[in-house]
Length: 482
Ligand code: SF4
Image (cartoon, rainbow, N blue to C red; front, side, top):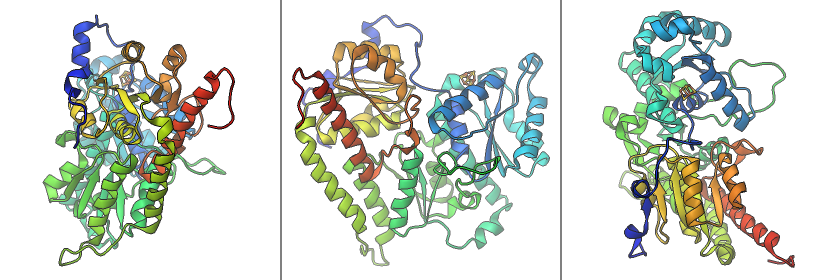
């Protein structure tokens, strides 16, 4: 990786350095959501999957409301609905009732049981309850520890994916599903574990692998369950999601691709499969922009193309060659509007790292790179993706108050992130480009394409047009040609 700024390390302000210079107060307006939300999102991407939150019903209501506002789809999340007695003596009976209710009303094939702050604090042993209650339902019960005081939505999301893969593998090892998996024809060659991407991104991931004529499992896959068609009648669990048979066969695939290279091994489903069954784990950066997408494409090429002698016999499909060429042409066309512009990016670690790398390749300086939750290796994750620019601030575990202070002192031409940044955008009069999750004040959040060459083209147009609109609005005379 080329680092062009000789003063880069000295010039970057980090959260630790900022803490030394500012008086710090407890979190104000967090730039993250809670861990059970991530787990609830992940299980929506599993065939006939249903989530129960073990705790008070407000957690479930809040998370449901939050997700429906973004996805604009019906979305049920059950709760074990703690009362005063269960908050003191434990919620085992409530959980049993919740499992029976969910089984009766939804007939799921798989249920995740995610803990909330309350059940974590009182120390309810959900893992033991799952073992005890497994005979109550045909569905597989999977405990997912999601204490929000120890993580945020991305942590809950990865915990659920990891828990589901590990659970299915354990069943396979115990011989409970091996017959089905063993007979399964056309088993996947590759497992793909995306980060929290939009349904449009997940659809595009599947289009890309199918253009390579590769059989792949994408887990989770909420591209249909959270962005589906209109129904004539109520359907308890939305159709779609990753097939349970495919998850059970994940350990038999040749390779896994994950898009969060700094995710600790103990929380990574792909790392688990590599350790347990030798499934090669390709840790890729987010497939944002040309560089990120090229690495993804070449990984697929190598999976597809190596014959017995190790010779490559497959080219990048024509449609992607054309998309890539058009994208380069658009980069050239737009460079005069973008070069030297300054952007502040905020959100999940994966989103910020992917977006910053994309900005770096189009000539925009990601001056502020702010991750809303604690993420140990955020700085190296971020810097690994930059070749031409250097941020002036990199920080994890920041809230919107921190972001506003930093933005006021550093300054930027555009803000890029979720819709929760709108109050800052309005106050500081900096345009906000809505991307990532959640988008609560616009329609189309689930349809925003971020990944691949097509996603890069979409983001490029949005960024350039936002900058041009600002110039046009700010102009005293106005103009029609740009
Ligand atoms: S109490 Fe905890 S789990 Fe429930 S909504 Fe709040 S942060 Fe999330």
